[in-house]
Image (cartoon, one colour):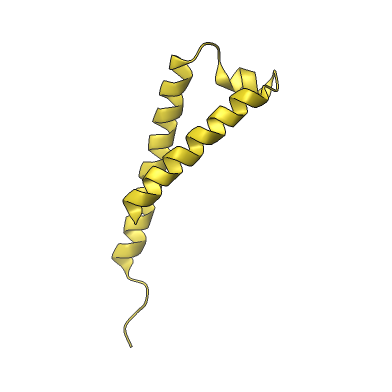
Length: 71
C-alpha cells in the first residue's frame, strides 16, 4: 500500500507556511508605514476596533493568497 502522506508534500506545506508568515510580516510592516499612527499602539493601548478590523481583513486577505498558492 502506498503511503498517503509523502515527505515532499509536508516539506512543501512547511515552506509555504513559512513563506506566508514572512509575507504577512512584510505586508503588515508596509501597511503600518503607509497608515498614519502606529497600528500596534492603536490596537493594544487605545483599543481601536476599526484598526483591529482593518488588520484582521489584511490577515484574511494574505491567508487567502497564500492558501491559493499552496493549493
